[in-house]
Every structure is written in structure tokens, then in C-alpha cells.
Image (tube, helix red, strand yellow):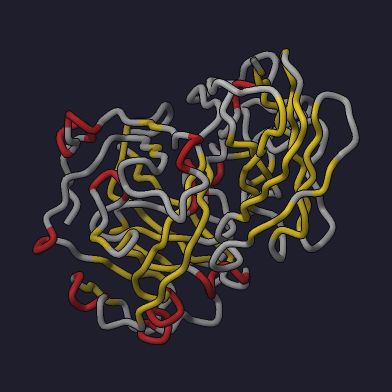
Length: 349
């Protein structure tokens, strides 16, 4: 189980603090392995022994339980290819810079996650009628201003949100046991929502009535634009987004026909289309290759003619509900939710 010791006493020194972006070159791969998928840890990486692991399900339930990993593995096994994106992805593009990890491109990744279905667990514990939210409690904790005790990393979902039915209690990534930095032994995977809701090192699930008031729900991870009252709006679903990943800005590009490739993700109902623009020219439709499931990234490609010199390439995706990437993202105090049309500059020899 998770230690009750002060925060830094249960952290692996070689892995904490740890933030790592996904290399753009691998985003076109069928999946991102544990060594390339982006990582964002708030309080280091807890050291949890499998034989000590316990998941406690408490709160407004008829049957509270404390299950070991072997108990969880008796739930219906489910697998899904899911794109996860840090809410602070592309934060450095805002002017002036916002607080937080200075993410540029790459705080997004995709993998095949497997484990038990959250709804199966609910069949066992039977949430009471008055329960409105499910709270995921992680084992990682840290000292925060204004709090006498270290606070765990916890996030909540409304029970009526469709994402609950798709949530996985995952113990596998790409067919292999989770690595410690990705949430071993069990993490939540909430498809379609920002990765902050896919709580790692899951040691508690709590059913509550009303809004959750934990720090990382009520205070942090809120979208607050200039002039908007505190604490701002809760971050939930990922809006539609896209990136040109190949060629990369550091690649040597020869003049002539150039194949532009990239990925799109987020939005509602899946990706409906992606267009690409070179410099200030017309938006060109691309060939799209949907991934294995609604929450996997959609790959796109188009061949363009590029002369020698510097060229700015942009991609713009839309979802199946008609929403598309905006031209700009409004500045906000924490630099969250940047998803406007992204420009990549290529140098052509």
C-alpha cells in the first residue's frame, strides 16, 4: 500500500522530479511505449510493492471493499487505445508565459491500456442513490500552501458523465505491466478527458455527494481567463487538436514534393477531418487514417510542393460534431487548454 510517510520519503530519487515529452517522431507510431510516452508527475514516483497493494473503495456505497491486485484482476478485462494529453501542453506559446511546467510540443501520447472496468467495480460496491461523483485518490502526495497535512493527488468525475462507462482501472500498458512512472500497479484511464483525470498510483476510489473540494479539483487545474473570477472553470474533456509531426523543424527537407504527416485527437465523436496550410495559402484537405478506436489518434497526410526557403505549415482539425481548432487560444493564468492552430516552421534546402 501507499506509505504514510512524508512526501519525499516514498519517492524514487532517479525518477523524481520527472517530466518528459513524447518525441514528435514517435507520435505517428502505432503506439508509444513506456519509454517514449510523456510523463508528468507532481510529487515524484511512489514505490509500491505489489504484494502490499490495496485499493480501498469507500464513501456512498452499500459494500465498501479493500481489494488486492489479484481481486481487481477478476473484473471484466477491457482494452482501449487512448490518447492522453497534459492540460498544460503547448503552454509556452502563450504570451506572457503562464505558470507551470514549460511544456512546448510533446505533452501528448497514446498507448493501449488494459485492466478492469470501473462499472464492473460499481456492480460490486453498489453506489448509493445520493452519490453524484466518483473520486480517484492517488498514492502521490505533497505539501501545499494553506494545508497542514500533505495532500494526495485526487480528481473526481460526475457519475452521470459518459466517460465513467469507459474508464479503465489499468494495470497494463501496451500488453506489459505498468512501469512505476506510468502508475504501477494500477492507474485510472479516463478516455477523452485531459490526462490529469487519469490518476496514477490509484489506492482509493470514493463515492461522494456534491462537488469534490480537493486541491487538484477545486483550486488547481482550473481554466481562468483574464478578468474571469477565481477559481475559474474545471478542466474536463480535451478539445479537438492536431500537430504536424513530420517533417520536424529540425529535419533537413529537400525542395520539391514533401509529405506532411501528423496526428489529431480530442473533440466529440472522433475526428471529422484535418486541413493543412502552407504559409498563407489555401487550406488543403488531407488523407486521414483513423486509429483503432474513437480515442486513438487520427493520422493525416498530404503531399505539397515546397520551394527552397523557410515555410510555415499549419494543421487544423475538426471533430464529428463540427467543432474545429480556433485561430487563437485565450490567455489564461495557468496556461491550460492550448489547442489553437499550431504552426511549424520548416527550412527547405
